[in-house]
Image (cartoon, rainbow, N blue to C red):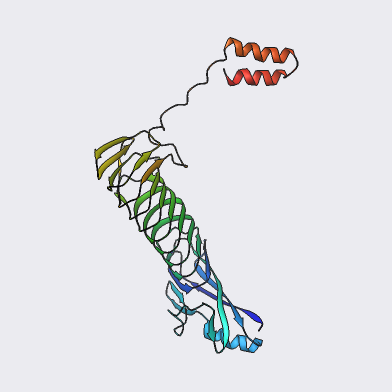
Amino acid sequence: MPTYRRVQDIEHEIGPDGALSLAVTSADVRLTATAGASARVRATFEIGAASDQEADEAFETLRLSVHAGDGTLAVDEPDGHRGLGGAISRLVGGRTAELYGVEVEAPAGCRLAVRVVSSDVQASGFNGSQQFQSVSGDLRLIDAGGDLDIDSVSGDVSLRAIAPVSVTMNNVSGDLSAQAPTFEQLRIQSVSGDVSVDGELSAETPHAVDTVSGDFRLASGSGITVAVRGMSTDIHSALPHRLEGRADRRRLVLGDGAATMAFNSMSGDLAVTRSRQRPGPAEASVAPAAPAAPTADERSEVLGALERGEIDVDEAMRRLGDRA
């Protein structure tokens, strides 16, 4: 049976801070922020049918439901398929059909709500209030900012922010990775996945990371005090620090300790490393050591190589200069 491709295009003006919601199943979802006021959704279907006419008939039953209002747009699966795995190779009048992918363009500052099942999601450039709910799929957020509320089951979450963010993450069975210039607030709960955080932590609000069996890696350029609770939790720090307390109640202090974070875990470990974005708190004010001057033997060796023609003058100057 041949396969026919059908496309549903949806466009509605919601304004720069309007609301857009999307709920689909088994489709790769790509969301891109724009500078305009309109939200555009393109859904692509692949339908197995004997003819164009049969494909058109099936397409009419598969089209996503659209609810447009003043400053709002909601797109989800049609009533007959909602909650039934809408796009999972279902039968429509004896014909197979699949929602192949969904592409979205929307204002960067819009209020975004995305709910997916068995779908990978990538969102780029959004900086407003964002909510993501995902079951069985990976979530990748690029060039993000603003407030993010993320719930994920059986999927990895990757956040790369270019502006300050406030983040709430809840995850079951999946790794979480978050990188931002500043976390204004950070609250993460993870059951069986590892957590990685890289960025400055605001001292204005407390932060918290809870895991059951996952490890926590923290890379930060800000002074921070981490209150650690966990009977079998090991603590490792590649940065200068103070470790206070004992047993299941310890405090790890980096730099001035201004920002505060609680790390609670049953069996996960804590590792603190140098931030990839900026120096660690104890190293920010330390000037690099000046290179040692060349010794007499080293100078003789370089000058001898120059005299024998093994190196030229520029190379000799470079070698001596590197040690000056």
